[in-house]
Image (cartoon, rainbow, N blue to C red; front, side, top):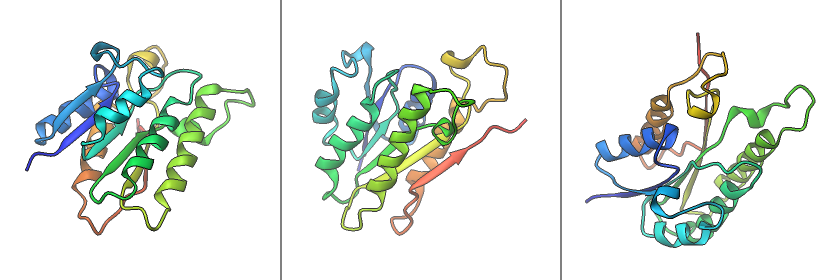
Length: 182
């Protein structure tokens, strides 16, 4: 039986690595991005509709200064919470755990909101849908390529997604943080 997975932001970086890993693992992968006519935040409801029959939804695409990831999580969860075997994986960031030297940082605040929503939804006891939050540190993507810090590869995040999906049904991973070492 082939499983289907939906990935937002599937054309580059983390989303591309996850899409490739899922495809290699036998999933029928559906990508949602500007290149497939799914511009966020306008396409939220359409994405939720088109991903409804998937088994896995990877909530990866980030829209700056916008709570689209939280909205996608919430709307899809409302549809999936009573369906066995559904998994929503949010790609958040360790940035949600820290303030940026006392400055207001929209990215960190939005990722913190996603973390909080994921934590709340993963603790709903009667829900049949799994909600997982992956919080990587710096990842070598186009948006931070010029930042001189140790970084994870996008494939590192994809491997974490694969590991989570391979857990037996009795094991529910709700959150995982990844930190680059160097």
